Length: 514
Ligand code: FRU
View (cartoon, protein in one colour):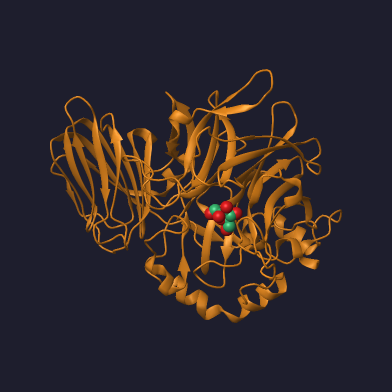
């Protein structure tokens, strides 16, 4: 596939037919994950359009099936009813128009009655412009609207905002629309942006019909906090209005912001009179402490849960993923349920994942634990006290806790030689009370103190072995974990497939036929 040419569905289908051997090579890689969503081949980044629509969860994602280093982005698509069995669908959106020719970039979904509305950024690179720098000039960032009645077949694409519609002081970087319905019944859109002074911010738009959008204002910090805020998401959680976004260009501060780009959450206050929002900038917090977490998105499911899925990867890092040799790279995190308590965002693995547990071993005496675990497991550790602890998670990988005297302590994840360039990441805690570790063939997600802090990272090495030592006491439960299952579209309900055969819903032009 050529790097800077449009890709039509037919091109993809032909390429897919001709690349069975590529799929087999990827599938045979021992680092393929057991309970995480990955690209079938090639590259994956941000989760997009997360939603539950007529009972079914849809997980779209930034996808470059053709090669593992990520160039031209499509929207890939998984669906599930239970987060255990997934259907891998064909990609739904292709860079096939002048206004999205260089990438169907990130965006979101909003289910309204029988219609799923998706908004994304159509990315265009104007190479032929003499002043092309792809930052201030030469970059088209179009906000595009598509609809679907089955989550699989989409209407004609409609551009609802172009660069000319964004405020004049914006650079070419404006993207990643997240759309939601407010309690006032109006539709709201937030867009991540970089202004001409290279300050990161969020733009707010409002609409009554999802077609016509009016600029309503912006949100930033008084002191610059990075040059670009990617993938914004605004929602109210347990009474607190929050902005989650990914600021780029923030330097390390103490134990914070060690990654090249950040993923943060900010508490917002809305002015009662004007409705304008401001950020509590003294309290910008990291969403994750690991090496590989970026561009998360949240959505409300039909049970009212605020669920988050992130990209288990990060752009521009100076560490890599050896899976590139096998023709694929990156994955999504496990889904997490969010809550807000005592000023902090809490993340807990979605309870559905409990059904992956198989064998279970209980260790009543934590200190001195030495378990013959493999590398695919879940471990729950509950500490009755902990001054100092060293936990071996798998061969060459450890978590160390050094407590102070009554002042909490520092927990450090150390990947040693197993991180493909990743070394250490720390977090300060007010004490170590609990750990929940999800270890997959080439990833780790560690939920600390009931999800007050999380470390998400890729890890390499195929040998397990768990040990705990130190001045600590408590109990551990270790589970083997089963893998996700994958079903064919027809095995699921047959509904999506019937719609496809009939050429979508009739009222909308089927994307496949354009
Ligand atoms: C974040 C991001 C988004 C963009 C997408 C392109 O990882 O850079 O801002 O829409 O990835 O794949």
